[in-house]
Amino acid sequence: MEEKSTKQNRKATRRWLVFFAAVMLLSFGALGYRLIDLQVLRHDELQSSARDNTIRTLIREPRRGDIRDIRGNLLATSLFVKTVCADPALIGNWHPHVAHALAPILDLDEQALSQRLKPQMMLNEQGILRTNRYVVLKRKVPREVWEQAQGALRDMELGLDEAKFTRKQRLAFRSLRRQSVFADRKEDQLRVYPGNHHAAHVLGFVGGVDHRGKEGIERVLDSKLVGSRGWRVTETDSRKREVVALRQQDVAPRNGLHVVLTIDSGVQHIVEAELAKAMAKHQPLGITAIVVRPKTGAIVAMANLPDFDPNAPGIAKPETRRNRAVTDTAEPGSTFKIVPVAAALNERIVSLASTFHCENGSFRYGGRVLRDHHAYGSLTVKAIITKSSNIGAAKVGLRLGAPRLHAYMQRFGFGARTRISLPGEVRGTVHPLKKWNKLSITRVPMGHEVSATPLQMAMMMSAIANGGKLMRPMVMNHLEDDRGRVVVQYHPEPVRQVVSPEAARAITEALKTVPQPGGTAKRAALQYYTVAGKTGTAQKAGRGGYLPGKYYASFVGFFPADAPALCILVSIDEPKGDYYGGLTAAPVFKAIAERTAGYLGLKPDLVQQGSIVSGSNPQ
Image (cartoon, rainbow, N blue to C red; front, side, top):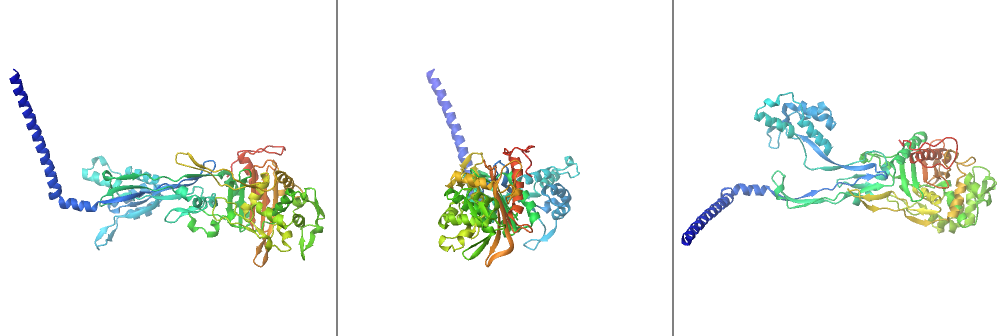
């Protein structure tokens, strides 16, 4: 029995060996045939195909980061856009139907589009008459709009019973719907500013073939906004289509960071609207306004007119793209009187009650006569600010002395950039002491022989509002990634303690009288808030001296005076008609302050009949 079982096992083993050998023989035979097919029979065909295939490194562009305001409102964003094209030969006589489907989506005239889609005969490069196969319908079409266009083509009504089509007809109409209109594979980015002119000088713009920031925040933070490219090493066929199965490396792009500004679009809208009214009323060459939080130096709003649309910077005049708040300087005039008075108070060489004789409006010094607009006799230091006496300011400067005055000018930040994160900022002018002449000590205290930007003046006044501490202006709050995680947080940055809190409080008491009856800025007074401020009216300086009839008018102030929430500067370049700061700039300050206080819901510090309306529409 055992011998019989052994024989059966041997037979089974031989059968399995024969079967395995047969399978192996067939496998090697198939492999051999495949090798012969590839190496001999199809050698020429495959060699040609291999020549057509190309290993390429495909660059994957990152998306540029957004810019938003402090409340998250979108100020600048990037869209992926395509060039939409068509094949008139495939469209044939159906061009009116295709035009009807696409025109409203692509925002094109239907009749004109139908004509462009109509097949036309033309000579190709070989001189053969052919139907045109390629026409550009529209460039810079957002990806979402292109997807809508594709849907419209798929749903296009042709007035036919397509259920009765033959297979050939179905294929033809499938080509009509899916291939007759197409988009280039390459996508570009389009930078979009939804608010058009809104905050244009802060945002700046992008441009050039490199799509890089050219002005404003776009330029300063370009390296953060742009992100980093990715790449894909792959193989493409003769039509430059990727062979996905042959993809070798795939590195995703890293999108740019998003910038969140300190700007509040609601306040920015208020400022821009009030500047537009003042521009129409006074017809100046230009006008600037800045809103600052004194305690932090945060810029809540910054606007200039004329301005430009960053969506189309190429058609704007160069001067409209200039951020006057940081690029333009002028003699500040009487707003500068704050500097010598604050310095003298800080040095304790005067008090608000100290008196100076103002020479009845005519003061001869250094062989020249300095005049006031009114014939004042003796004025206290407080009244010198209230009345804006040139002679009074000059005499305070004389008591302070040139070296100390010069030092305090520098301590307040004049003659140096504020280091705001915006391009194009200039230093202004503070002449070295060795270049001062005999008259300088009487002219500098009234804002002559010195030049400053509007931002420097706003930060000087903000220092007074902040207990004498000068802050670096900040326009960026933080940077965040696509997930909303904060990557960089910007913090308030003190520059220096310019004057003591006591000196700051003292000059604030003087500045509170300026908008009151008897002061130079009654039109800056607010109904529900105390205001501390100063007017400025400065004749424009030219190469040969001061220019007749050409003035800068300004007002800079803060409120509530004893617990400052905001500091606002308004500067007007060559207003027509009235040119005094109290008549032109002060009312603009008032309008901005009243609307902004309502929008932000600031608590009033004056108790009067009626109530303030909070949450008003900033538009």
